[in-house]
Image (cartoon, rainbow over all chains, first blue to last red; front, side, top):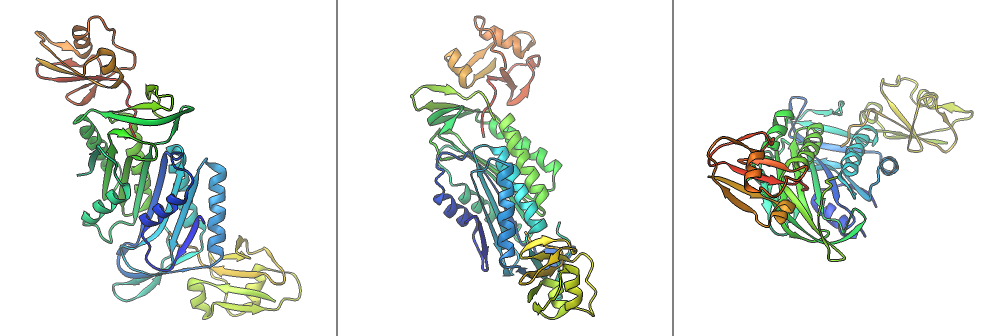
Length: 143
Length: 143
Length: 76
Length: 76
């Protein structure tokens, strides 16, 4: 499976390595491009204590699979992996992992960026921040 | 140190994690962009058995540091790491790792790509391939 | 029967995350919102999905569809 | 004295990786190659560095400089 939704802390490097070991691509991939999004302890000028990630179970997977299909149609990639956290999350914990394997670097770089931008634009996730003041607010700007 | 030259097999994920643990950036980085170049078992239509990576000790480090300074002048990045293998190397082993940490994703993506392109264009490394036929040849095209 | 889903701030505004609605003639997504929430104008920028695909508010809704409303997404 | 370094295929062509050369007047990088290797024309596309920085072949060389010649790089 190219898409994983995790409701607890995940180790992005372990996820990549586990996935990579299953790939029948030993010696075939020359390029791996990886993006890891990590929770910061600040946003929009405020200190953030914690966050809750809500998502639309089912639609999330459907939209991420569509994004992956679109990337595969556009670039010659060998495989890819998307992992996204949901539920309660703390600063410094990984939120999202996107990893692309290809023979050459241009495809890996471009497809990885594309997957990440499309995920941010179209995958149905919503962030609820708990500020240091204990105030809760829905994130509205998705930079 | 942002630049490491390794004369034996390195684990890119271990390198990233060790470096990341030393960063005083917990909660500050929201984006990590990583590129890993891995040795393929084919090149220019031929099967490749092994490779030797020669470099210009001293100039390599100097040029990579210059490239990093140029990236830091251009993008707001928090830190970066470049690891490059030298000496004998086998298919499926990592050749190069570039990793960039930043607050937001655009900087990480763009600086990582820039570092990798500049490294390929300017860092004094040379690849000597040993083909499946046992013939040796210097790689001349750096795709 | 059609099945309604609300997410994030929209779910909080309405006070519930799911609802069901009987429709007797072809309706659009916007009609469905107005029938289900006659007292709540659809907030600006609301996105809609039918059967987990994005659709415009003018999209037709048929019996057994799952219709979701939610604010702009902020994952990643 | 100036210190010469040759790398990769150029090192193999010349059969050695280092050399030293006494220069008595200002010379360019290209002059240095010709003085050190009078029988070997400088291969096309050869790159040069003085003290580990890239330079054009017209760059002046001074005493104690390290001058390197090498083919296009192929790392990464």
